[in-house]
Image (cartoon, rainbow, N blue to C red):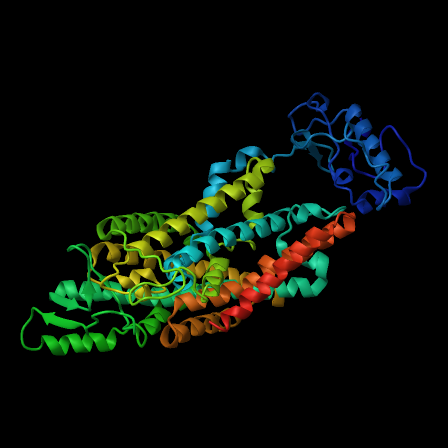
Length: 562
C-alpha cells in the first residue's frame, strides 16, 4: 500500500534501480523532441477515473523504459533515442502529476483548429488592407500592361518568400520550435542583431500602416462630414465633375497639366442671406489637413492607452464587410462608366498613359506592403487543422489576394472616363476620384472609417507589445511610458496628414523598407544558411536567393528616385 502513494516521477523508479542518481538529469539535457515527450500509458493501464485511484505497475514499467532510453543517449547523439514504437502518438499521450494520477493531453485537440477554408480567408482578410485603395494609382504609375505583369510577378515572389518564412522553424534541428515566430528564427541564425533588426523593420511596417490609417481617417472623416453638412443645408457643390453618358460622376481633385477642361468648383447654396458666411465658417473649421487630423487625437489617443485591445478585436469582421462592399462598389461603377482604354506602348498622350513607364518601382513598393504577411504567417498557420496542407492553403490565399487586387486595379483604371479626364487624374486613394455627394461612396467611406477606428488601437497595441516587451520586459511598464510612445505615433500621423497626405508614397516607402529585411534579406539568408548546414546548397539556389536580396535593395533605393 505504501508503494501506491509514491510519485511515479520521484527519485525511485518502480521495476528498476539505478546506482548513479546523477544521471537523472540526462532527460532534461536531451534536445530530441521525442525524448522530451511525456511517457505513455494505454487507457487500460489506468485503474479508473476516481482521483483517489492510482496507476498500475505496468504504467510504471513503461515509464522506466522511456527513462532507460533517455539515459543511453546524450545531448548530441540521436542514435540511441527512444524508437518510434516506444513513443506514443500525440493523441495517446498522458501526463502524470507528482501524485501519480494520469491526465490525457487535450491541448492539441484537432477540434480547436480551423479547417482550410477558414485559414485561407483569415490570411486573405489579414492582407486586405489600405493598399487596395492605391492599386489603381500604382497601375497608372507603371502603365496598364506593365502594371498587370508586375502585380503577378510580385505576388509570386512574395508567396515564395512567405513559404520560406513558414518552413524556417521546422528546418532547425534538435530544438523545439513549436512556439517560435520568425524573429526567433532570425535570433537563432543572426543573434541579437537578427532579433533587433527584425523588430525594427516590423515596427516600420506597423507604424507605417498607422500613419496611412491616420491620413485615410482624416480623409474619410472630412468627406463624411462634408456629405452630412451639404445634405443638411441643401448645398450643391460642383467640383469639376465629369461623366460619360449621364452616368455617375468622376472628378479630378487636383488640376494636372494633362487634365482636360478643368474648371474650379462652384457652390450653389439653397439657403438665404448668410449662407455663404456659414459655409465659409464650416470650411474653416472642417479642413482635411488643418483641423481634422487634430480632431482625431481626441478620439484615438485615449483608445491607444487601453491596457488590453481585446474589445477592439471583436470588430475585425468589419474588415471583411468593408472589402466586400468595396469590390461591389467597384463593380457597379465599372458597369455604369464602361471601359475607356487606348494602348500606347511607350509614348504618352493627352488623356492616356503609356503601357510601360519608368515609374513602375512605385507599384512594386505598394505591392510589397500589399502582399506583406510574413511577420505573422507562422501564427496564422498554427491554427490550421491540417498542417500538411499549409503550403497549399497559403498558395490559395495568395491567389485570392492577387485576384482581388487585380480585379480592383484593372476595373478602376479601365473605367476611369478618358475622355474627358486624363488617366493621370487617378488618385493614390481612388475614392477621392468620386465626389463627396456620391451616396454609395459615402457609405464606403463611413464603413472604412469605422473599421479603421477599431483597427488602429490594435496596431498600436502590437507596436507597444513588441517595443515595450523588448525594451522593458513588460508590455505595460507604466502609463507614462505608454503615453509617450502613443504621442510619438500619433504625432507622426498628424504631421503626415497635414503636410504630406499622399498614402501612395507612404505605403510604397514603408512597404519597400520593411520588405527589404522581412521579405527579401532575412528569408533568403535563413534559407541559404539552412541548406548550407545540411550540405544541400547548390550554386543555382545561391544565385537565385542572392538575386532576391539584390531585388529588395533595388526596390528600396528606387523609391527615392521616383
